[in-house]
Image 1: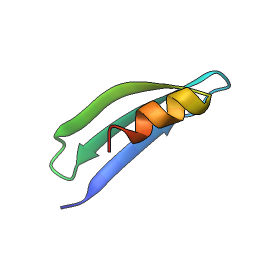
Image 2: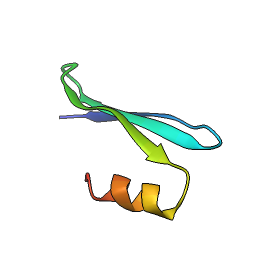
Image 3: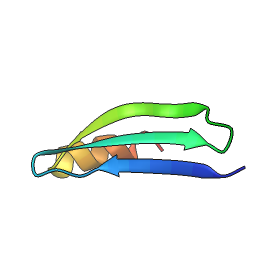
Length: 46
C-alpha cells in the first residue's frame, strides 16, 4: 500500500493531509503551527 502526504507550507502554520493509494483519507487537514510545539504535536500523530 502506498501512502501519500500533502503539505501546504506557510509562514505561520502548515496543513497536512494523508491518504492511501485507494483514495481513503487517513488524516484530513491537520494544522501544524510553525514552532516547536506544532511540530511535536504533528509528530505525535505518526
